[in-house]
Every structure is written in C-alpha cells, then in structure tokens.
Length: 214
Ligand SMILES: NC(=O)C1=CN([C@@H]2O[C@H](COP(=O)(O)OP(=O)(O)OC[C@H]3O[C@@H](n4cnc5c(N)ncnc54)[C@H](O)[C@@H]3O)[C@@H](O)[C@H]2O)C=CC1
Ligand SMILES: Nc1nc(=O)c2c([nH]1)NC[C@@H]1CN(c3ccc(C(=O)N[C@@H](CCC(=O)O)C(=O)O)cc3)CN21
Image 1 (cartoon, rainbow, N blue to C red):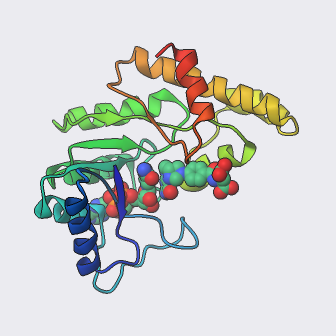
Image 2 (image 1 turned 135 degrees about the vertical axis):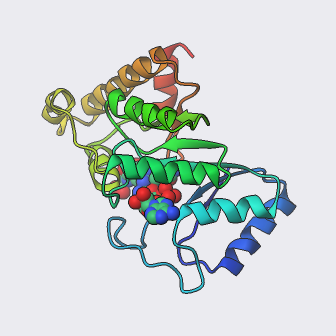
C-alpha cells in the first residue's frame, strides 16, 4: 500500500505521483495529510499550490483511478482538533470523500479506540476501522505515543515499564506483552483486523502475532 502525504507537494506533483501508482499497478493508497516537516507537532503550512486537508487528497486519488483508499483515524483526536466529536466529523468527511477504510493512530487503551468506533457508528459510518498497533520495544518508542499522538501513558503501563528503562531486554519483553494484552482485548471486542506499525522491523510484531496464536 502506497503512503501518500500532501507535505511539500503541489496538486500537480500529487497527480503525477498517483498517475505513477496507477501505471505501476499500485491499487491501495493510504492518504494522509502528513506531518509538518521538522516538528511534527508544529503548525501545518500547506504548499502554495497544494492541499490543506487529507479529505482533499482522498478526493484527488479517487478522481484519478480505481484505488482502494485508507485514511488516518484519531482515537484521542488529532492533536490540533478542538474536540473528539469534531474530529470524528472530519473522519466522516474523509470517508464521504471516498475513503474505504481507516487506520487508527497510536493508542494504549482499547476504550479510546472503541469509543471512536462508537462515534463512527453513531454517525452511520461503517467502513472498517482498524486499530493501529505498535509494539513498545524501547522507552523511545513509548515516548513517541505522546509526541506524535498526544497519548497519555496509563498508570498501569507506566508502573510496569518505567522501572525497566535501564534493562533493555526486560523493557522490550514487558512492552511486547503490554501490546499483546491490548490486541487480545481488541480481538475480544470484534475488531476486523489489526494494523501493525512495524517501521520496517518485524521481530516484535511477529512475537505479538505468535503470542496471539494468529
Ligand atoms: N499511518 C500513519 O502513518 C498515520 C499518520 N498520521 C498523521 O496524522 C496527521 C494528520 O493526518 P490526516 O488525518 O490525514 O489529516 P487531516 O487533514 O484529516 O487532519 C488534520 C487536521 O485537520 C482537521 N480537518 C480534517 N479535515 C478538515 C476539514 N475538511 N475542515 C477542517 N478541518 C479538517 C482534522 O480534524 C485534524 O485536526 C499527519 O501528521 C499524519 O502523518 C496519523 C495516523 C496514522
Ligand atoms: N503524526 C504521526 N506521524 C507519523 O509519522 C506516524 C504517526 N503519527 N502515527 C503512526 C505512525 C507511527 N510512527 C512512528 C512511531 C514511532 C517512531 C519511533 O519510535 N522512532 C524512534 C526510532 C525507532 C526505531 O527506528 O527503532 C525515534 O527515535 O525517532 C517513529 C514513527 C510513524 N507514524
């Protein structure tokens, strides 16, 4: 699946990229606005001839071919969204613009994902919503949950992982276990699939999948 962002691209460049996907046989596209370069939490400045929101990117991809399009969903709200209800309205707009499914941003407690699922159902929006799961292999990865997604670390997870910050192997094992428990609870709640953020490293994800017996 190609990951397409609107960062630093004019509409003409985006069209060119999507045309190239079509010519190369790529059929699945994840359409995200993208992080502001440098500081991901900084203000978004669109390219002067580019796009403001992922919603427009979805429309553009759809217009250019027969693609299956995924978008980002935010269990804790996008860091720049004013509130969770408005954020859910934006996700619905992305779906109405042509998205076929959504992948959730990082989260640590199933309740936040499940509440987003409820907000979508309440809006009559029933495209598949996949949890985005990332094995917590290092303290750095745990910090990214807060930095990229504004996810607070729940007390139970902090109590388990923070005493292990100077024990890389112990931290990794406990972090993989925490995420395995999270996946078990999501599966029990009937999620259609799990999306893993692997960052091109598969070992921890393979451990989670094996522990789940999948
Ligand atoms: N798979 C991945 O790598 C993921 C990446 N992300 C990151 O999340 C960030 C934003 O992603 P997207 O959801 O694609 O952006 P987006 O353009 O849908 O959302 C950005 C902000 O604009 C608001 N917004 C959206 N549409 C709007 C509209 N029509 N009018 C007014 N406000 C609107 C949203 O509520 C949000 O606050 C990016 O930094 C992306 O890299 C998020 C989740 C997963
Ligand atoms: N706003 C946002 N931008 C993204 O690029 C993004 C998301 N959200 N959410 C989903 C995934 C998760 N992303 C992540 C998650 C963790 C690290 C991270 O831990 N980086 C470490 C190095 C990790 C390693 O290579 O082992 C770092 O020190 O930056 C990076 C990107 C990228 N994706």
